[in-house]
Image 1 (cartoon, rainbow, N blue to C red):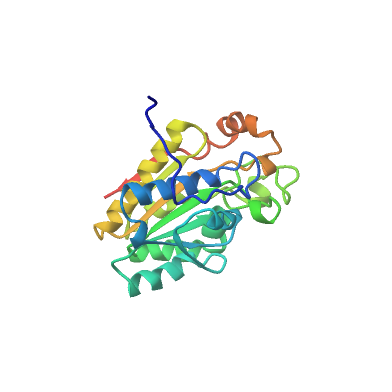
Image 2: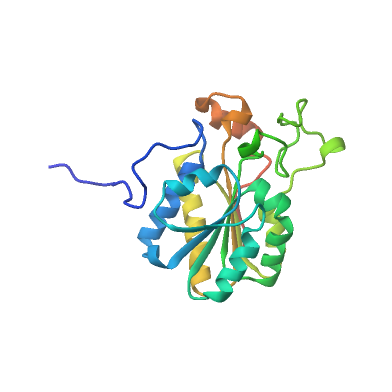
Length: 245
């Protein structure tokens, strides 16, 4: 008799993904529904999503979700959490949404110590609108708006959000994980779980950055994504915990 060791989450709808081949946003959706079930928080968790590729993923999961304007997820989540302090609240944002137009909202929420969790998926570009330069684009990376590669002289340096947010006194946890290998995915899941647990305990703002691939902008086949990231992404954005109080 075969032993069942894994089953598809009932919170994942049986439908085709809208993501490009090799995109890792779907892994984030999988992590969220697994944690919702494992932590028994499905009926007490709400996710505020911004604007980005991940919006397509909202149709794939059976979780309570509500939208915000571009960059305003942390502001909207602040109001929601203050009105419903006993409900777990997460923001699900991309690097352009969270670290560019929403940078002020993100840092102010962290500075105030708002008791919710931000998940920022960092794919190093504006994938949803054509692969333009983002605040997290590494030096040398070619994008739609940096056809010769990002340079410090012309576009400045990439922002390291996990490190930046960790400097805010109201931030209680800040970490960066990745989504390429099984070991990285397990570690990223641990970070998100810990962030939610701290929120449950009322400790304040928690932040998890997840390095995600965008093969469409990388201009590499999806089976070459790991090699590309190991050469061009992981050395720039160090993985690990930057604050845990």
